[in-house]
Length: 209
Image (cartoon, rainbow, N blue to C red; front, side, top):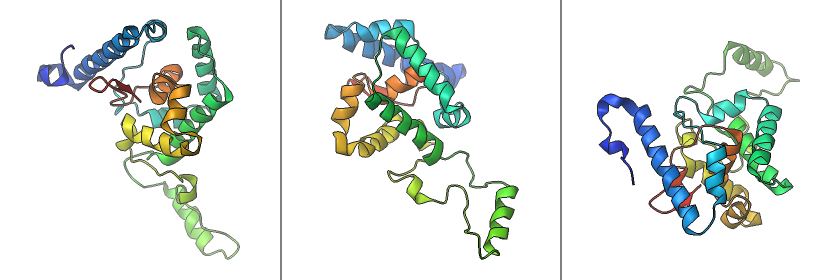
């Protein structure tokens, strides 16, 4: 095991610490894969390096929200083909659910302010009997499995729990890991080249989310 963040010199900054932690995570997951005779993950990480930009500065949910869906899909298809991963309809169901969740159910900014145009549209609508007041984000039905704050959406385990609930009827964790043996979030972020979530690989328990 390499240097941990606690061992980093304070003068080097959080970004260096994050890089050291992620390097440790990658080494651990590689060692685990090779220890069971599985070289596919090792080859995958050699061809397609995980993005290690700080997720707090580049929130994956914000990146997904601001990127046309077709661009994300094309990127995933190209990268999956490059590393030899076949994506079925079941894979795409999970991928699109995750992107929908990022777009609709993760806090977009630190405040709840929606902008003055939205406010005045709402006020005018309230006074109009033929109009139904509707503020963006007010519909709880859009997020039946819950929503996450900006900070929570950076943590792999919190997002992973949403996936497990969403696919409970299909087997939950078992279904997700059948499709994504190296972790649904780790794999989808890798293929989409999104910043890694905090704790997406837990070397202490040999778990990848």
